[in-house]
Amino acid sequence: MLDFKQCKPHPALQNYIRGYWLIEAGDKDEVLELIPDGYPELFFTFEGSIQIFDGGKRWSRYAQAGLIGQTTHRFTFETTAFSKVLYVKLYPWTPYSLFKVPSWELNNNVLEVGAVGQSPEFRLLSEQIYASENFEQATALLDTFFLKKLAEKTAESPFIRFAVNQIFASHGTASIQSLTDQIKASRRYVEKLFKEEIGMSPKQYARLIRVKKATICMLDDQFNGQINTISAGLDYYDPSHFLKDFKAVVQQTPTEFLQQKLNISKEGREAYLQQWDYS
Image 1 (cartoon, rainbow, N blue to C red):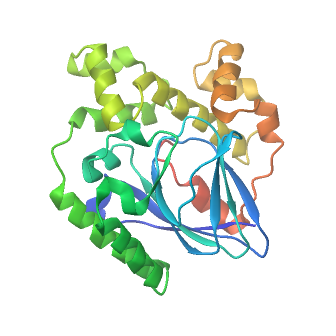
Image 2 (spheres, rainbow, N blue to C red):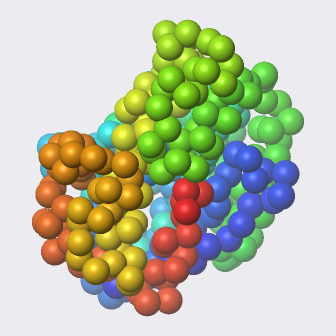
């Protein structure tokens, strides 16, 4: 059984860091299926070990600490018994803004922390975190690190943050036309910005958020099993279109997804479901 604990970042970082999470495994190896959620993540393995399995196709390169970029399909992480993993959920524009890493280079990839931005400061950060005594001390180190990166950041496009927030607010139903109309820019320009700063096109990104929102609705205690109600609520007027998108991202049908057990403790479930800004 996995347990989730949450800690908020420093207020000055609230536009770059969604939150810090500590995931602790019980007395046996655990498997957690993860659906792409539009957020890159840093991870640091305190105890035990993890391996990340890419969509049922191949094992990704393993690292004790790393940066997971945007993922386009379901992936799995497996933890050994009594593992403790610290996750930093980043907003989608953060790797480009703070680390100067073109986001498309991270797609479906795990980059070892020491290689992020080709800077040794990430390796030093991981060493400091491993030496910390508890979750609170580790997150204080992360705050200090990210505040320094924030002071060094280069100029960023205000449109990207606005556009992503529009996609979040609409649960992935916002059209690229509505986004381009806001800044009176061409579709080609907007797609170029998204690829560099987010890692994919606005259409691809919106589909991820739309499908992820569907899976969150399915995990809600109030869900009554009516999948068509969820698809209609996400503006899928054609059930076959919803099924196509769902299978492309989750690599399962909605029925198959519902048959899986979310192996998270009752206490950690609320923290798990609070990871995302789209309500």
